[in-house]
Length: 605
Image (cartoon, rainbow, N blue to C red; front, top):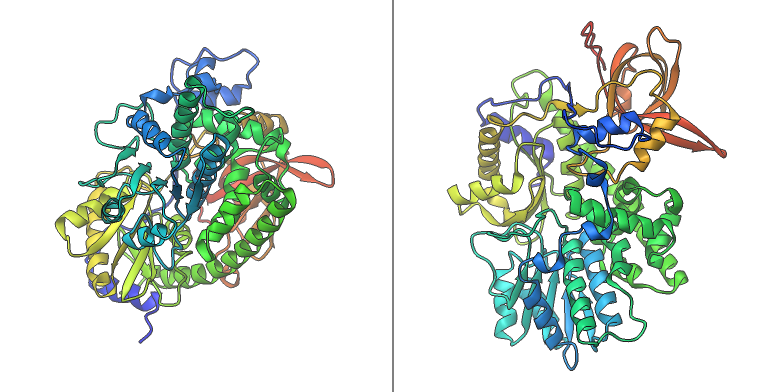
């Protein structure tokens, strides 16, 4: 019997007591701190306000030179990691086991490139195919790895939850170095060495490192030791040569851009803009029609990372890693074209799955006995693709403004789920609480505050969904809620200008926990049209000024056949963008939300 997402939602909803449901979105403006007088006098005043609202107090807080990085030697376990790696430099065989996402791919490529360039005799990589092996260093992956006779396995962007896999490797006489950034559970693997800034008791200055950031720190320590011992091969690259990979992996994994990560991303972007990056990144940028000289972190996040991630979602991340390892531009281009093809396939699959999910959710949100009154939502359909459920969970989460887990079949009556959360609800801790209360429900899980993965038996899905709703409800009762949209306030009509857009673009890198600036204001819609089936193109005017602007809301239209274009006065939440067309650069408003005019409370479609 086929299980559809609509059937699942209906069965679960009917057995749940009403809890919370999304209310109307409302704007909350970030408030700049009082002490923000330390900026340069020539800094754009809008950028000064933006920085002050993010806790930046002076120009020194914006210093992104490499000297501002937390010292390499302060990351716990790093000296022991170097000792272990150097034991296997000559006569050993190092096998890097990565993850199947962009963070894992960049981490793997960085380590392979660095170790090979610095005189390690035998370095290879292995990345699990998610459809055959699942996530992490499992006993099955260790068995496959053993056929290559490694003397040392190094995990990147995984391993902290691989207790059985590490035990299997050690039983075979293979040493294990774990480099990871995911949150550990109650037990940690019995690896030879673990490097993870999120281990309990860690005093390292940043817990926000991505997996590729941890790999970079370990490689920096290796290079320092080799230099001290005069073992570095002539002409070997410095560790800074690999910052392009660090920037891509850090942005792709949506980790918080704290001061340390802003340095890593900024330095990596500088290398890419100047053309000093691996041929694979250049090829992916070229296919995405992104110019290296004007590159921003947003370009990495929305143009490069999805194409790289497509390999792990649809096929095998080995394709992506080989693209990042290719030194021949023609080979890199060929692999990048294959990644682009996989991304187009991924987009088609995602569109179908998203339509299924949103259609079912819409029916259950309509007034009636099956109205969706839940704090946390679980979705499952037998036809769904295991590699794309995380994207569907993210899209539905954005619509519902509630944590969402989307599941797909994983064989042997097992389900694999990808969870996405909202601010104020730590999704990995939610799963941890469920596992503590109901240990029989979840086979395994792991992740971060905003995203997590889990495996459970199909027969337990209904019970798990109820437990998930209840636990999220407990969190939601004390959180600020997901119905608020944070903005950087209202711009004057003179500040809505190309100059401001350039100032904001150059003020990054922007990302998680250091959000790209967005603004709100009341506009009168003068004209609308639908482009590309789901995008709303608008011409909007600032009331009583006569100033009008081009605006577009991407993916604003869920169901074109039911859509009624907004009209009259509305409140827009928007970002400033520079639109290039036929050699001309013009200001464009990128609209994130179309809300009711707060002055009169009119409704908006």
